[in-house]
Amino acid sequence: MTRDLYARHRAVLPDWLALYYEDPLEITHGEGRHVWDTVGNKYLDFFGGILTTMTAHALPEVTKAVAEQAGRIVHSSTLYLNRPMVELAERVARLSGIPDARVFFTTSGTEANDTALLLATAHRRSNAILAMRNSYHGRSFSAVGITGNRGWSPTSLSPLQTFYVHGGVRTRGPYAHLDDRDFIDACVADLKDLLGHTRAPAALIAEPVQGVGGFTSPPDGLYAAFREVLHERGILWISDEVQTGWGRTGEHFWGWQAHAGSGPPDIVTFAKGIGNGMSVGGVVARAEIMNCLDANSISTFGGTQVTMAAGLANLSYLLEHDLQGNARRVGGLLIERLRSVAAQVPHVREVRGRGLMIGVELTRPGTDEAAPDAASTVLEEARAGGLLVGKGGGHSTSVLRIAPPMSLTVAEAEEGAAILERALRSI
Image (tube, rainbow, N blue to C red; front, side, top):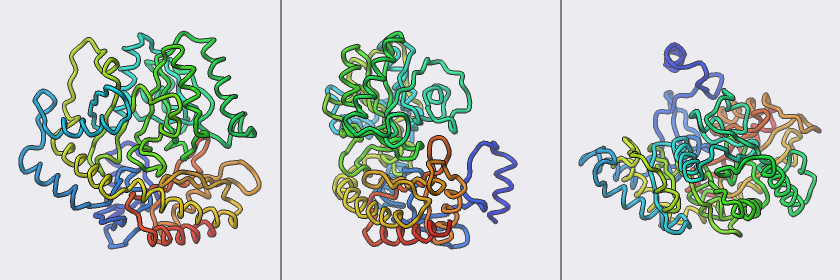
């Protein structure tokens, strides 16, 4: 059955639409932190549909809210008043940390970042954007134009002029040998030098933890130091929280809060986890920025009632059950467990991350050379053992990405770590 579906997939869908595994997997249903395939194999899910299944598979509170809303009305567009959209916007605005916040809903993180770029360039009357090396912000034409990761950048054409800044990767690049304070100082000096050679950019867009880039991050405070430089010049700061939002990093509700010394971002984008699998994205910005557009605009599917009902139920569950605290506690245990394993596996260069957003970087032993074949081997072996993980990375895809639903239990973390240990030892 799966082979037949794979043949049909290849016949009708694009060649560049990536699939995991030599024998691609069809997932038929899920519950909690587990999913099942067409032949009944059960897997512990440590990737959550690329970080979208934030709380749990088939969470009763969310499925009930979706079913009840679908029984009333599924969709009407933003041309009509929409109670669930207003209610979710009110909650997101309060949680955002941005003063006088306005919220606009989209259908994805890509579309959210597109909207943020539109707002920033219109507000600043500049099409120049600062972005981070090794970054990823989506699949659209403008988002690809600011993506600093060659593996996810199919064209150099862009409506934007993009300048890439150092700092998103702590343990690689020309400043990797420096201590944290000197690393930040060097990146700030690089930013100042770059700004001396360009027309004033509209904004800096940055992921507090780079997702597709392999869950890399700078020292805490880097973006606060950048913010001081940007603020002096009127340049906006866009924090891409598509993967880091809603408490996944454990220590903070938003990734930017690790860099809060100079105040909140001007714009925050979000998506993925808030819908727990439903198609929800959005932008939060100060009113003066959000309201700067001088032409009509709507969103046909952004903020549709059924996805807003899911978002409301999911956010309520996350807050009421302190899933941020659970991500901090269980994620901390999982990171330490994986580090103890890594010390015995020569291919593991680094285990990094925060909360339930963990990267295991693989290289050829004794070198910094990426080992994509080793990553593929571990991916396959983990699946054979009943565990699903993701992949990512910068110059080459050799980082295992671990991001389970945030309701993960200690027992499930131990189970997953044991399976991953066996897979790593199989290299």
